[in-house]
Amino acid sequence: MSPQGRRYYVNTFTNETTWERPSSVPGTPKSPVSQKSSAVNGYYISGSPVHQLDSGHMSLRKTSGDPQINCVTFPHPDVMPEQQLLKPSEWSYCDYFWADKKDSQGNNTVSGFEILLQKQLKGKQMQKEMAEFVRERIKIEEEYAKNLSKLSQNSLAAQEEGTLGEAWAQLKKSLADEAEVHLKFSSKLQSEVEKPLLNFRENFKKDMKKCDHHIADLRKHLASRYTAVEKARKALTERQKDLEMKTQQLEVKLSNKTEEEIKKARRKSTQAGDDLMRCVDLYNQAQSKWFEEMVTTTLELERLEVERVEMIRQHLCQYTQLRHETDMFNQSTVELVDQLLRKVDPAKDRELWVKEHKTGDIRPVDMEI
Image (cartoon, rainbow, N blue to C red; front, side, top):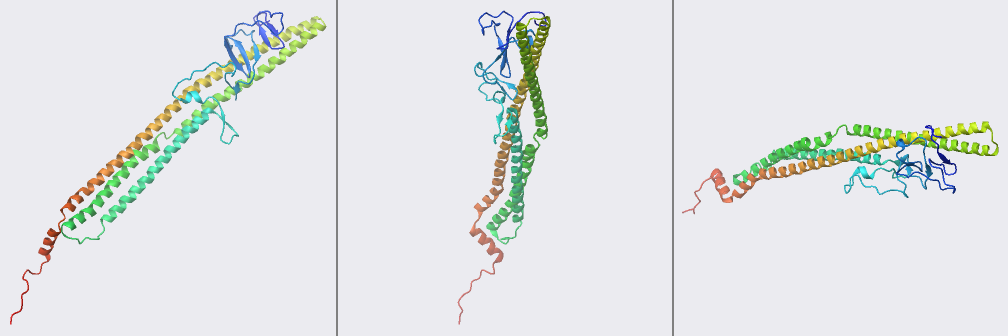
């Protein structure tokens, strides 16, 4: 009898129960039409969702293979319905990281969520290394600017005169101008590329650790619910065996004491069945909560990765833009040099030099006797 006082039947060989009296042919009990199955350690509890079942009715049937991996229930391969992706054609994180897998050494198991988390942390590290790369580029620019400025003050060929001397002096000055351009370039690299790369999500690792702990706690809770289901299932098996043994004793020797023991064993068996259904219900609730959080969190990780890649792309574009501007400014520093070089005139230089340094224009003549 169920706790509600309703009669039901137990097949002690298959552990199946049914409200309807089984047929006379062994192994062919009549069972209600199953609309949904919930897997518990290789067993399926048939009927409505577990939390909606009458606590006196439970059908347990062992399936081939174990549909559970690390306490997570997956559809059995033989009865698995076709599942639609949550985000078809997008290769979304929320569709492809439900199972666990072996690590690269093949020793430990890594959850799908941990793999996604490692991807995020690796992305953060790559971002940091890019910032370090830009820092080295800045150092090169600063050193180059320093050397250009120093060279522009060099006195070599300072005594060159004329139009060529003007062009040479402008060329040396252009080095100082170019040094200034490179200093500005390095400064902008620091403020517009390096600094944003370093400061983007400063607390990212701490946030990821919180996220990891949250999902890990849900997974641990699921594992504890799974353990409770296993314990309840074993308890039900023991109660059913005890009931079967006492029933066989009754067939051998009929006594009031045996009948009382059978009633007591039936109550315990029914209670064990109720406990199992309650444990399965709690397990399914825990798995549902973990599932929902996994979908929400993996989609957030996906959004964060898109945001990270886009941020880096934008700042690398800024780098190339600054580089183009530097080339343009560098070109402008030599334009005046080009103009003066086009005006270099050896004849003009000779005229200017002669006028400044001439010693006399009266030429010598022949001596007369």
